[in-house]
Image (cartoon, rainbow, N blue to C red; front, top):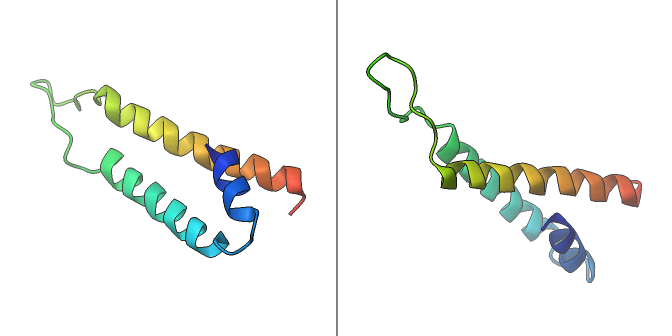
Length: 77
């Protein structure tokens, strides 16, 4: 996914700033959703486990961030 983002926006160098803004906004929205303090608590006071879609969104976010770092290192910037 990160390779697609960097390749498609970097081809013409016209959408770099827009793609960076959309990517950062998406990452921050996922962070707000995943790490919000509105998680349910169990009877013993511990936090309830996250649902699968939340963990999948968090994994997608981490993968895109890591992939963009790898693309930057490949390009030497």
